[in-house]
Image (tube, rainbow, N blue to C red):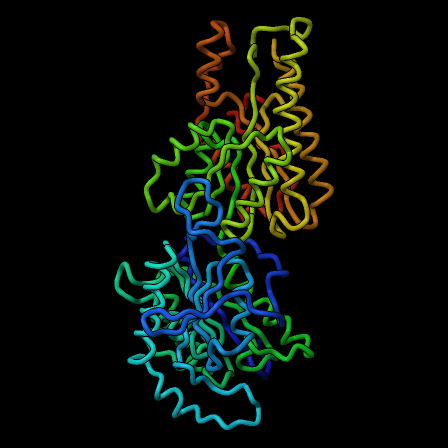
Length: 497
């Protein structure tokens, strides 16, 4: 039951990224004060405030971590781009464009100044504001190369954030978010406020009912004890207002799902990457096989290519792993999950007993399967890389729990990595999940190569697919598995029983 006071409802349409399996972004991105990081430019007569990720480059080649992929169109409240607080939202690390909706004449921030809301809103209706929004969208697409755009609107801008969602195909934004929007009409039913000066209770109920009939995914959040406008201009001395701004800001960020997949040039890693992309996640893909990685990338639809960052990486090189993870975070703004498929069976799997295994073979397998796994795990769990509530999934083997005939070193390496995963799960369980997938016989290029190399290689009658492993991995990466931590999840058709 709602108590008396002011309430705000925020809504984020999921059409930009298509999944609700996002995690809360790093709160350090939110600034209450400071110096804006962007610049004001003039585009076709429109003043636009532009903020780009740090060291933004406009390259278009594969592996360019800072190439714009998606952008944020920030539609302000009545204080416009002249307000420092409106500009500070760009600190989150995304390509952000904030158009001057009021032609240099916003409402004054002087609390003593008068404000005629009826006159102000009347002179800045859709016939005036819609063309401004369209011009800003053209700038983002044509000049900055944004391929997907989400609109965020606060107070006055909330209405136009959703009007931008209803533009014709090719011109519309892909998603919209609003906090305490005002003057919403029936065609702008997307977000609402309760007991707010801009929204009555009856209207909120009508809008909520209407949203339920659209089939469009949406989320809602109520904030009590806060004034209209709290998401941009809170009283920071009042804890409930400060907390409300923090949470409302994160509502706009958390729906994006960003995942790193190592060993993703083929097999289970590639299948997992494709599954994530089909769910509109953004994916950082790496593999030692750079040629295979690029081939897989070229085979993607152009729209999916915009969701990918690829780079050839040797996971046994910890610095290279660190650089790749940070580059992916720079490219997409955060990292919510990491799936480590990088590994090897060695050169003699299924042919050499323990006493026949050379030091070189032992070192090769252990270096990739243990040191490589350690590097990816350690760098992923370092403070500030993986989002709070994020997920790390290591792909071991059914032989993480049993012996392998003429494959002792391989089995030993998989036992070691499982022990490492379970230990890490104990250490970071309060902020992240760490799990292990244990595939059995899976039809992959690596397994087919072993079958060709060794005539009597173990050939069970029941063989799984890379997609079946991918399905479990995606589940463990997602918010659907929030109570799963330290698990050794078999995907072996019961062979491990």
